[in-house]
Length: 158
Image (tube, rainbow, N blue to C red; front, side, top):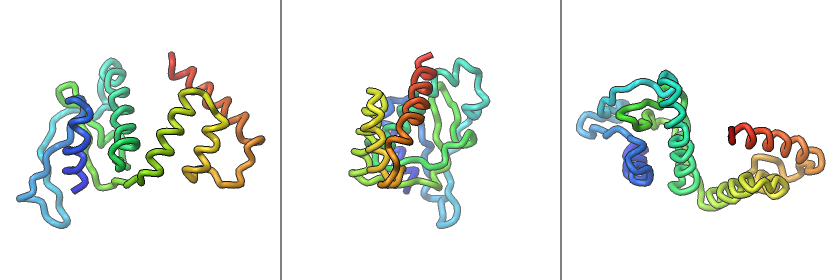
């Protein structure tokens, strides 16, 4: 079910840049999932130019899952990310988490605050998303949080 959902909902959003293998429902059983075989190397084993091309696709893919679909592939380790015909291939949908509408909206708001460098508002978003406790000390946490995020944003621009 998870894999079918991602094939149906994610592939069209990604315009052919992401592929989810077909499930063979006739051979699949309660404890055995059978899918089409997709040849290709792991993304991590590809040349640097391929990785540079597909990492932004992966970021967009996972943001679409988090902010639009409401479910995300929870096990994106290198063995579950392949490359085939220039596309990012996602496999192994055994771990999928659902995200409620409120959380999706909060994550979208947090992304806006991160991109616009509004770290004070982002701190509040982290509390709303229950990533920080409600009584978190904003005065103590915000300066190092802002420093780390500023460094990360600068590094990402390079």
